[in-house]
Every structure is written in structure tokens, then in C-alpha cells.
Image (cartoon, helix red, strand yellow):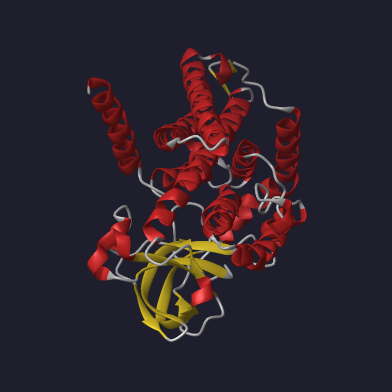
Length: 386
């Protein structure tokens, strides 16, 4: 087996790392402190051709492989986790969903502005009582002449208020349960849509996270994504690729934590020697490095399988489950290595620790990933026994 990246993948990775190092990393702490949405970073991603990078060129995409896209999420998140998730939601949860499930007319209409960065995308699924249980959606879509009327409230929406287009999931037939959910492409300008104030969060603070409030929002038929009542399937399929992105975000955060901690150990002295020479510190670094490589291998395998069209539900959940866990543990190790300095906002380590935690929660909690893995595992055993 050849684990080496192709020349094209190496070139894309190098360019993404350079952009992140020069443009994103120097401003990450300030964005975190002020909670300012990094619109500048989004514009730079558009200028660099990273938006819609996996989509066909006829829609403005870059026709890059899915592993290349994953390398970019990782690189951007290593420098600024907030930028990483904005990029991931725009590309995988919104643009990719429009490409996979939209009509040709919808692709030609919506994708070019998304790829050029003229429109920012968001994904509005979660509700106060419908997070992991997406089938419990309470937002409603009522049939009217020429389209639908949407009512309800979405919560914890990444890019909320900043995005120009929202994929909104609503119940179009409550009697059908999960088979009665429809997905709509709702513009920010639609009368009746409004947004709550940006939520105060533990981490990724510059990422706008708001409620999305729908009050008799009219959506014409040509903005229904996929077929009516097909929304639940679209949501689940879209979350598969989204989970790869969050695993990549976790890997990027962990890489940043290891880099910061290792460099610090070569500078700090205790008991007459560099703390890098203390065995316990070396053990911490060894654990971080080993977990990072294991997470990266799980991630790259899942991304490659997804890009090749291979069913990878279990592998994707494994990658997200493991990468998010070791990111949290690794950033905690980083804080411990830096000691008191690790607890100070003057250093990036405490921000990395705060940013890491959300990777265990959004786009499918770790508990949900364990359920997905276990079900796939047992299904395989049952098949072998029959």
C-alpha cells in the first residue's frame, strides 16, 4: 500500500499551509478575543480558489479530490479553527449538498456565487429538541400556491446571520415522521427570516453561531432541494462528509497543540535542564504524536473512501470519534506541559483547548458516532453468521 500523497495533493497541502501560516494564524487570537467574524479569511479562501474546490469546473469549482479538500480543512484549522469550520460548513454541508441533490438548474444558479465567495452558505438542521435526533424536527413547511411557508426556529447554526443561503430542514408532513422532512434553500433576504444574537461560546468564538427564526417565510418551489419529503436522507448523507471535515479540524487543532508544546519544551528549563529532557514530558509528547498520527490515518482513509464513492459510514464515524477525542486530550496535555503559561490567553494553548471540545459535539456527538460504529460492526457479524 502506498500511503504517500500524490504530487497534486502535496502541492495543494503546501499552498494551504502557507496561506494559513501567513494570513490566518497571525490574526486567530484577535478574532477569538473580539469574536469578530473573519470575513477577510473567507475572502482570501475565495481568491485562492478553495471554495467549492471539489466541485466541477463548470460551476466554478476546482475539481480537486476529496482528500485534497480534507488536507485544506486540516491546514486551515491548525492555524485558526474558526476559519476551518466556516470553510467546512460552506463547502461540505452547503455547496456539496446543493451539487449532490440539486437539479441542474439549481446547480447552475446557486453554485457559481458560492464558489466565487459572493454568497456564504449555512446548514440549518438543529432545533431546541432536535439535535442528535434529527427526525424530531418541529419546524413546519406548509404548502401554498407556488411554494411553501416555513415556520420554526433553528439553533446553534454556524455562519448564522453572516451566511447568505441556508439549507433549512422542515417537516412537510408530520404524519410521515422522518419521511416527511423537506430541505429548502432559503436566502437571507427572504421576508420573515431573522437571526438571534451571536451566542457566547467556549471556543471557535469568532464563528457566528445564532438561532435562525422562520416566521411565515415563503420559499418558492424552485428552492426545494431534492424531492419533497426527501430531506432526512439529504441531511444524513450531507453529515457524512461534514463529519470528515470536523475530524480534519480536530487533527489540525491537535497538530497545533503538539507544535506549540514541543517548541516550548525546548525553551523552558527546570532543575538545570530543558524540560524536553524530562522523561515525563517526553511521554506526554510521545502520546500526543502517536495519537495524532493514528487520527490522521483514520481521517485520510475515510476521506479517500468517501472521495472514491465507497460506502464509509463506519470509517467516517471512527475517524471523527477518535480524532475529536485525542484532540481534546492532546490539547489538555499541551496546557499541562506549558503549566501556568498554558492557562494564560497570552499563549495559544488555552484557545486550542477550548476550540477542541466542540469537535466532540457538533455534526454528530461522540455518543452518536459510537452508535453508528457499533451498529455497523454488529451488522457485519450478523451477516457473517447467517
